[in-house]
Amino acid sequence: MSDVLSVQGLSVTVRDKTLVQDVDLTVGPGERVGLIGESGSGKSLTALSVIGLLPEDVHAAGSVRLAGVSHELIGADERRMSRVRGLQLAMVFQEPMTALNPTMRVGDQVAEAMLIHRTVPGRRSARLAATELLDRVGLAGAMKTYPHQLSGGQRQRIVVALALANDPALLICDEPTTALDVTVQAMILDLIMQGVAARESALLFITHDLAVVATICQRVLVMYGGRVVEAGPVGEVFTRPRHRYTQGLLAASDLESADARLPTIPGNVPAAGQFPSGCVFRTRCAHATELCAEVPPWEGTPAHGFACHHPAPAMEPTHA
Amino acid sequence: MPEPVIRVVDVTRDYPRPRTSLLKPAPTVHALRGVSLEVQAGERFGIVGESGCGKSTLLRIIAALDRATSGQVVVEGTDITRLPERRLKFLRENLQLVFQDPMSSLDPRMRVRDIIAEPLVVQGHPASGERVRELLDAVGLSPDAGDRYPHQFSGGQRQRISIARALAPRPRILIADEPVSALDVSVRAQVLNLISDLVDELNLTLVFVSHDLSIIKHVCDRVAVMNAGEIVETGPTGQVYATPTHPYTRRLVSAIPTLPRALAGATTSDLLRGAPE
Image (cartoon, rainbow over all chains, first blue to last red; front, side, top):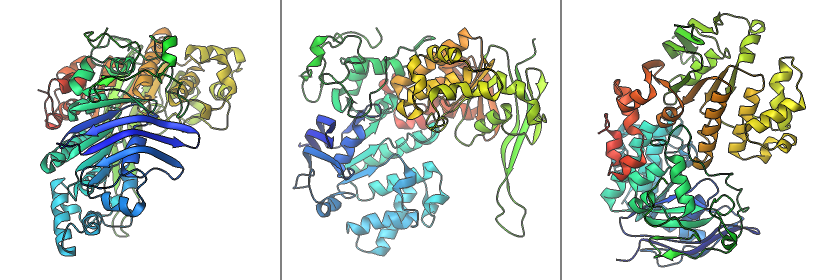
């Protein structure tokens, strides 16, 4: 079976700064893949390049192919992209405030998504389908409401319904629950999981929350400084991390088993475009040597590997 | 039992909302409905709850930035409930706050050294460069950071500046309102450690507010769980986390995704379930 999404050698640049470099990423049919990283790691830019919504002066290079779309997505003009967007490829954004049109009733917005792509025969059936979608996210009575009448969690449920309206082959979620309370987060995550399972859609889930990725995804890619530093099955990467950044991130976020002091990663995440040459993590890494001034080669297979000159030993448990 | 540092007795706070009709009275929001709690000296007290539960209102009332509709707030033996602003000087010195958003809580047009010295200046203390350098050092910033402006710092560093400012008048009570919610994971750990260390070194009483029970569990000894303007459960954090008794707390605890549970095969429907396991 061929992949639903295949990204090869993706780079994103703004003027002379490189923000994302050499990202390879595939998502198989029905597969749920997580993309984790802190702010400035390039995870959102990667998603925006796939869906073709990069800001004007930001440019993507490389190759992005989507199953069922005969053309290359990078560099495709707006007319062709707008036929793909919302049909084969849909996205749930972080801010449900800005993702919805404040002047339109939410039911009409969901119906519009289907009318634009002509996946329903007419207005009446679009409205029926929209009612059913809203019912599915537990907001059956919300057809005639405006976004400002709904809470953040309710709005995000509308956005999820909207993204799933045309049964996309790939759903991209960019930090969909970051602004929400934990109990609301649990509900949204469950809706997303049920939605993609019912449609056999593939899922690319972007977040900085390791536990969320572990709950939702089968495979994970760890990004730092615009590069993928480690990739593999969730169970492997989170229990036996090889890259020193993944290792540090896991230790720093483990509030469960830590004693009084949390293990930390020294320093701060550098500003975008100010990451060091060679290994992007070397300025914060305790294991860095002169060798790290060179870009570490990728070890392992594209689906399961890491890029580090001084990896953690293969059998070392999570917490040293 | 010694007199608690902070005692809140049956505090309510009602906000009037704009009228919706000429014929009906304006509706009110009951932000707090009879909250009582006690914080002992040197304790690390956590308040956890979701947005809109009233935790920020409670903090503002404890810090006398807002007034309770009814009830009583006693800080260090003084009833501050009806005290006029001019007699709150002792509170302004002894109780300091760190806010959630390090972007909006620092004046973008002031140099960092002036930001840190401001609480001293306002309270009529001499603000020496020596004290500012000492504070910068205490929060792990270099001395030359004082000459720069807030926008030149990252989120984690800005939160360090906020902490330095809060510590300037040598407070005995530190109130932190979601201090790490806006930070990256790798920086969050640093700031949590810093707060922990400073509370130990300076013998502070800490009131730590968060929506994330797992952070509270890491930092605090005791926790109050708030829901819809009421405290539904209070107890030692480990106990509340491991064996929550109130249904709301149970729902809250089980909704937190954790790595060990996820790796053991927990799914999103497990997060929605009322009880863990």
